[in-house]
Length: 278
Image 1 (tube, helix red, strand yellow):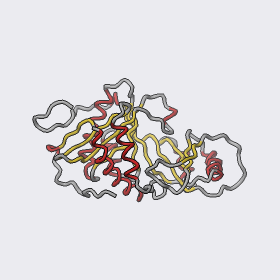
Image 2 (cartoon, one colour):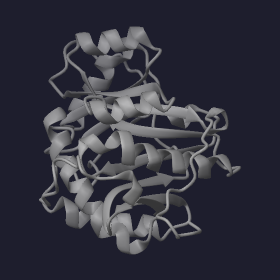
Image 3 (cartoon, one colour):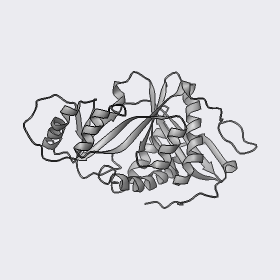
Image 4 (cartoon, helix red, strand yellow):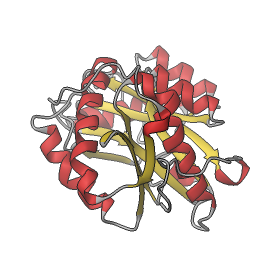
């Protein structure tokens, strides 16, 4: 695993540049992601358990994203070192947002070199993306993913006007009790993303469910030999969240949204003195 500084107290914003990412930034962004995976494993040890050689597996994916015009990516540089990065996919094909009509950009890969940089580097990366998204007709809102327990990042998102819209609740799959209800529930049973290794298949529910459907989901997941069940719930669905908590689920990911047309951003791309253009 790559080792990066745990503190950036001496990083000065006057030395910071936010610019469009280049393919050659992929290695540095992969280093930042490697450090974050170690942090997130502590938040949800099965859901976010890093796979062997996770960085090597992530690197070609990042490089492909940075070369693809279906993604918008920004890199933060200070004194010639990459201190942050953000990649936005021009789609939101993840539950529960697959049921929404809004055209959305999804920000999953979003990193800073140390937690103390979310309120500086993270803010400027995000504001630069919002400014760009606002000028695109294919984007009506941004969706940003974070671990719910990643408090510095989560706090920054809230301060920037993003609102919690959904959570992914996860639980180890246990032998079911009772008889099958015969309910048709769309689940994706398969491998986790290649950078993670929960120890077996995962069962991801691909629609908004009712609390009464949770036992049937667990039965399907068990029959498919899944290791963990993942159930999305909108933040406003208190009944479902209470039912999930009562059955032993906990929140892993939290999904924040911001309609880009309502977010007033005056910041331009940050550039060192004498530098012009993006």
